[in-house]
Length: 287
Image 1 (cartoon, one colour):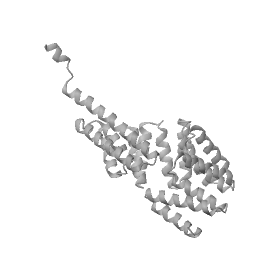
Image 2 (cartoon, one colour):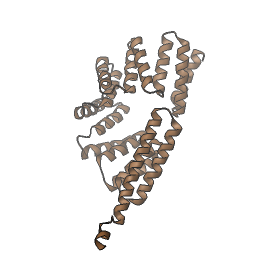
Image 3 (cartoon, one colour):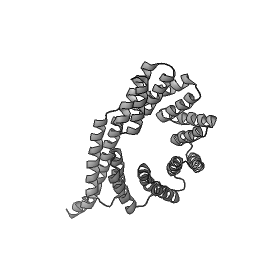
Image 4 (tube, helix red, strand yellow):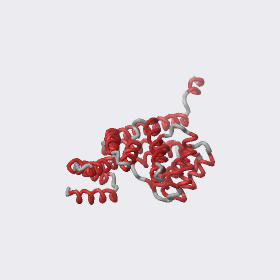
């Protein structure tokens, strides 16, 4: 009898097992939220993210010193756009276990808040902890890009690609940098590579479309905008770009339809500055 009792899981182990199951449930709800978002079902997505948050909070209540749970909570809160709470969660994860990936995550929060110095500090720390952390170089490059420090941005994009040659987003953003520098051949090569790595990269199709538009290769631009929208039906920028292309091609009816859709999406996404710009263009078109 005593031997049988000794083989029963201890209370602490049961709590640990239960909390790990809750973390997995949170990840499942978050995945469902991501799927709903990609399908344009925003209300359903929010419900899934809220459920994920409830579950991961339960896991934290069972094991409040597990840093992985706070990182999961940060991810969920980011999807809910509750950035201040997300910042508190990822900071708690770092305090419990300072890992490169979590410094990188907090750097993203600071970047989104335009706290560039704090973001740079975190990305630098992430790279110090893991010199082969391609994502940290990429994210630091994005800050340098926003600050118009293009040489530093290029160096970081190059390093990210050197570490991970299949890093589609790094090729895409390096392509944007080259395009802004009017190095169109290099930009096109990078967009092509991004699409080769990830044929569902709507951003790369849209950016390549802009490049073709600037070169007055309108049929190629239209094809890329169409593909970007086919991949992501909620891609406001692609609708806006295709609308501008239709206006250039003297097809005002199609232009208005796309620009109106872009305006709706920008407003839904709380991008009011771009929404106002699109509305001004529509007024000029008489729509």
